[in-house]
Length: 66
Image (cartoon, rainbow, N blue to C red; front, side, top):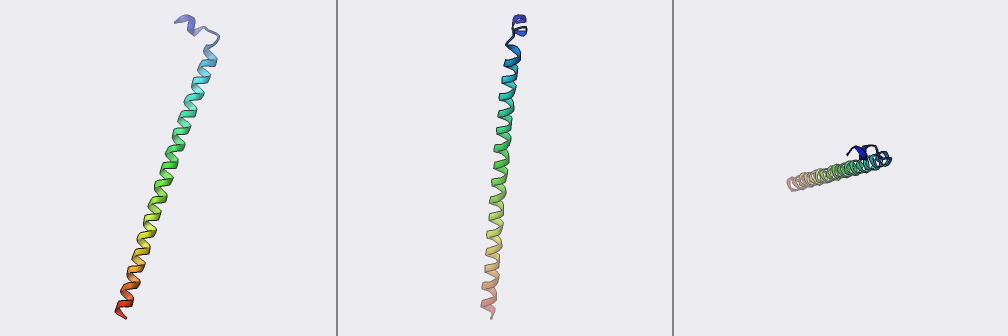
């Protein structure tokens, strides 16, 4: 174990592993941000459709009363 710690390769190995961990975390964060953005878009579309349906129902109700 002690030999591994004093190996000339320990610094590059630590650097490579740290870089891989950083890349993995960055990719995971990006996926989560994209997922949240997609959910937000879906909610906005649903709200737009509800508002449109409400307007259509209101205008249909107005034409029936006239």
